[in-house]
Length: 375
Image (cartoon, rainbow, N blue to C red; front, side, top):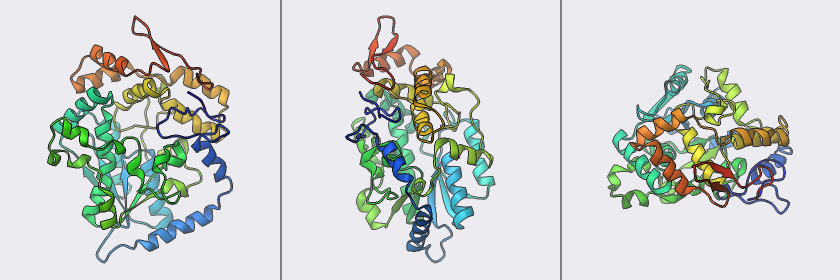
């Protein structure tokens, strides 16, 4: 395990590749941004919309996948207010047992801001069963739900005959998942190769599901993208101030409701992510034990690049909070999966990355690595 020499990105992030000087892709990209002509990128985005004009009788220019959170709120307002673009917002909603009142309020806020919203809601029983199967198979109950999240947007684009899909950040440039890089910095058609989506849905078939039962979880094929002339555009590529905090600040000024439970309970440094449900802190905890980094790492990496925190202070935050998760959320998560907390930890311990952590006899997990240094 090695860390980026500038931020706290570890090379354990799936699909990431450091430069020969030990710099992660996201830091490398940020340095390149200092030379960007943002007016030129603004004009490129305008040309993209000219290349994909709405059809006769069509009301929407593009589709944006939304949760009602900071990124989707900013994207929707930016396109409408700066470009006079009319987007159709598509939300994959969580079942009643998972969605938070905060999440419902934020989606309502988008509607109240004047946007058209299509809500996709997969069958709750199948959703729950897939989360149970995903946890037992991969120690990742989010594998299926993330597939549904990503798949719903191009599926609805095909149904509505809309060719342009606007996505937020480029996972390759802004996070380091290099397999998602397209022909150009804004080309998102290789999103299908990100860590979750690339696993496919075959494991669901192996569990006995019929394909007709899991249609919401099936990402359209490359041939479907070609047939319906679909193009995903990373909108974050066009915004020089795109970041977790900046997007949240912008969206909070437009009615976004954020968390108030605190970083020590969620691992969410500013309370602005995963606003629509409370299982994500548990998933981040599991991710931490698999790869050695959690939500706080993602936060501080951006803050380091923006010069708002030193690497030394960031290390202290990561050491203290990267594995933070309230027992209340773990219990609610287990209740939903119909397992005991003991069974949860047995599964997590079985998936623990023993190269990065030690498991003591009393169940305590300790780091082998030093944050900011590695192994």
